[in-house]
Amino acid sequence: MAAATSDRLVDSPPDSGFLDAMAALAGGVCVVTALAADGRPVGFTSTAVMSVSREPQLVAIGVGRRGRTLTSLLDGRRFALNILHAGGEHVSRRFADRSADRFAELEWSAEEPGGLPLLLAHSSYAVLCRVVRDLPAGDHQLIVAAVEHVVPGTGGPTALVHHDRRYHALGAA
Image 1 (cartoon, rainbow, N blue to C red):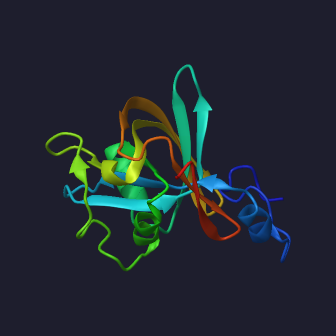
Image 2: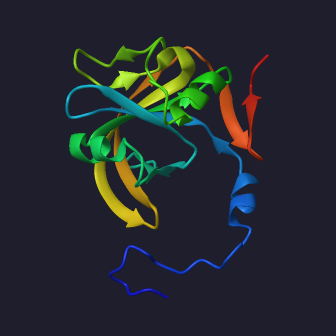
């Protein structure tokens, strides 16, 4: 085991089957959006999202340290958690593609002039959050955030989930 002061908490066994096990865990698909220091919208697809607390209302997300959005989340201290509706697979794929201009030709709005980018046309809800704590967790950064506001999207009570390396729609007619 590594020293307690290290970002590396434990040594992983070789070929442990971890990725296959995690692929068996169904996860709701979200797009995390924020603003870069220059005001550009940034974002990424994530299933590493969880509700942490009802009182106070807290959520947590895991963010890869090599991604382009982490700095914007930590510097700006705010983000939107866009919970994709059942028809949002194309949006998820776009925000997972590192080479794509993720916001080009995509319907989105700002929460207010100069505010967080929201994907309401592709989401059941957008949860606006303020970062309250972050800590290293292996090759990711775990971010805990307070919920500031919840905005309904156009997707109604449907959900896009990812399971066994495939997308699945829940609640869709």
